[in-house]
Image (cartoon, rainbow, N blue to C red; front, side, top):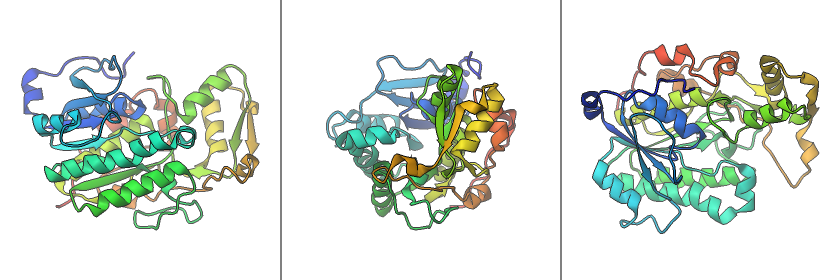
Length: 331
């Protein structure tokens, strides 16, 4: 069952709303964003799936960003010209760190080259461009990190995102880059994230190794999506540069697993505590990529507690649905 009723918005209301173009709209995070954004924008979603999700009032366009060069002849550029969106939210990415290592050519194109090209096309048209980055651009030894702290990624995925950040910001065009932390979610759609894998394993009684010395400031898919919808408003109002959208709770993966197991009623003894060093020196991982969210808070971002997010992660917390519209910054 969908957390929002699948009802079409009135045609007149849709016609009055500005257009938001979202890439990667059929992914784990994209679908949450589509649900939340459609009350404020006419949502145009890009997907490479043959059958897009059924989300009322979202207009879908099938487009593979990795087919061909992202020049003026590419279909996504034609869409920019046709739709003239108020903003572009670029969510398409390869966020699986293992697949980034297994296929560096493809993941580099998707995580680095594509956002740079899209940012250039949006800049040429003065369209605010947002693309999501990650706390994994940091080495993990000076948390909590602020937006201006120097990056020093340990993993390929972090390197790709850090390179894209630098190149996009150097364009001097209207760009806002939200950095996101570890994301989780269950129950709404099949997804590839920390919690879905944990849920499947524990449901089958399988033990799971979790790091006791790896800390994050995690967000549920719904909370991250709400922050991104706010960020679109900030970008339209003139906010530029980097902004951290993360949770307020710093927690290890092991302790996060314990909270999840207790909430779902699983046997917590199935969770096996282990150190990051158990992976060996060939697989470096940042110890602590907790993100400081002072800037986002000043713009109106207020994430619920981790416990609230855990107990409501399949559905949008009432706090998020009923909260007032974000206060945009001055241009």
